[in-house]
Image (tube, rainbow, N blue to C red; front, side, top):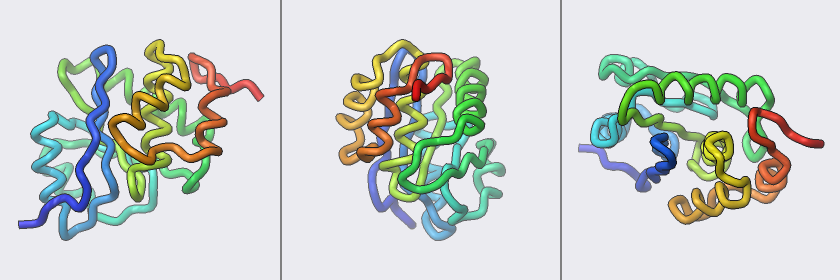
Length: 158
């Protein structure tokens, strides 16, 4: 039976729950699905190139959204808008968790989770620290700079 190469990180704030993890592959996807069931993951967001078939997720009642953007970069406005709409929709279901991953679960995925925390009232620096306590090495310097400029309601001040 396959196991997870790295433990996922659960981020909870004001009733919102996110599970950040590294990219599964077809060989270990079943281990991720077991983990998703433990955390009531109803939706998986993939922010990198595909490394696995989404069919097993869908067969287990888990929806998948593709929000890929460049590695090490900050998300474009269209990704932020889609992400925030998804967070709002999924969180209408009590105790629902959104699973989110990039390749290593250290850059793109934590940035989107930080945006959700900021939109929920957390200061940008606090959101980054909150995530880093739970996911060591998350968010690079350029992403940190971008998040510090991010303002609630999907706005970035340039």
